[in-house]
Picture 1: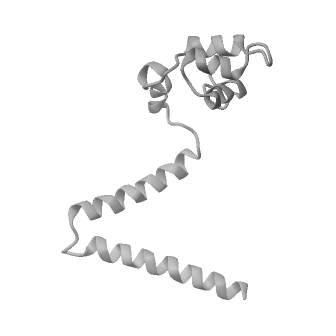
Picture 2: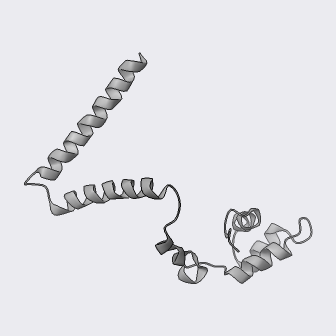
Picture 3: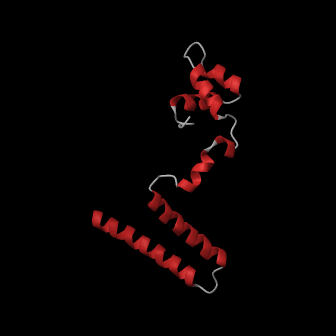
Length: 116
């Protein structure tokens, strides 16, 4: 049973790969079709190469000045410093900084703004 299932899956993958090759080599395929397929292939290869690590060329875009964010690094530090459960809570901070409570929660837990 498992062997048959694996054989079917492999045959489907092989059939899809053959179809992609046929489209790429077709005289009627538009340039954009070929580009999309090659970009998709390059994207997969790049993901495998990087293995979840951000390339150094993209690190400069992590800075809040290069993104459209409501908060900056100093405000995030203030939020973490001010937060005190039951005294200066998430809802109060959210109103003060004009963001949602879930954003404050993620900042405090370190899910967002990890490096500050």
